[in-house]
Image (cartoon, rainbow, N blue to C red; front, side, top):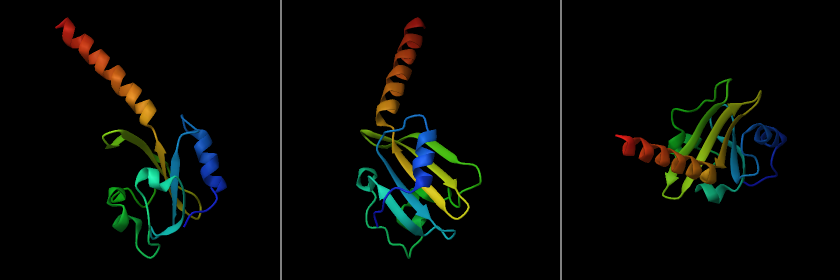
Length: 126
């Protein structure tokens, strides 16, 4: 169910801190069933979504995060496998819920190295 990227997604992507990264999106109805999906779905391990089932049945990691609230929810730098980090954005528009996955591996890896360096410095001072 790949489609051209909706304007709502393009607008939202312009507002986040690292545009241009690999992304995928899910547009959901009020019952949390798929309306549209697009972007680099395979990069995020998403394939063959059945629009007759709720998204939580197919992507259990979204359980408890839906339905989307009026205010966007961002879960940043989620370590999803040994080499990949993602940011997950969940928000609502007047007629849909949106889940956007953005690859944040480069940013998260840099942050992790910086944190480790600070920790090493703190330990060496003890």
